[in-house]
Length: 205
Ligand code: ITT
Image: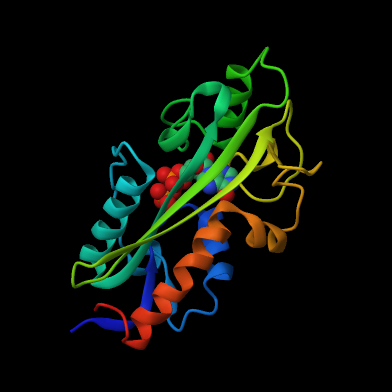
C-alpha cells in the first residue's frame, strides 16, 4: 500500500532542503529528508542531462523509502564556457571542493572574459511514485557571472550570480525573494499541482 502522507525530498544539500521546506509548504504532505529517515544513499550522478540525474535520484530514494520522492538536479550553465559546469556543478573543482572553492574555480575559468558573462541556473525536478510513475517540472533563472563575490544569503554559486536586469546577486536578495524568482522556485511552482494531484488521489498512483 502506498503511503500518501509523507513526501521525501531526495536531497542532502542543506541549502536545497531549506528552500524546499518553504517552496512546498502548501503541499498536503509531511516533508521529510533522507537523513531524518536514516537513509544514507549515495547515488552516482553520471547522467548526461539534469533530467537523467534527477530521475535517478528520485527513483533510488523512492525505492529505499517506499515514499513518493522528489529530487532535483540543478546547476549553472555559463555561455562563455559552452554550458559548463552544467550537470557537473556540484563536482566542479574536483572531489572534496566546497562552495567557496567551486566559486573561485569558476571565476578563474572566466579570467579575461569581459562582461556580460551570461549564465543561467537550471532546475529539473523529478517526482517518482511507488507505482513507477515519474513526473517532471523545470525552471530556469537568467543572469550573469560577476567578477567577485557579493552577498551571504543562499548557497553554491549564488554570490557570483547577478540577476538579469538587476544590480544584485542571488546571495544579496532575501531568501523569500529567491524563493519567488529562482530556477528552483519556478520548477517547484510547476511541481506543486502535480503533488497536489498525487496526494489527493487524482494522480496516477
Ligand atoms: P543533492 O544531489 O543531494 O540534491 P547536490 O548539491 O549534489 O545535492 P546537485 O547534484 O543538483 O545537488 O548539484 C547542484 C549544484 O549546483 C549545487 O551543489 C550548487 O553548486 C549548484 N546550485 C544548484 N542550485 C543552486 C542555487 O539555487 N544556488 C546556487 N548554486 C546552486
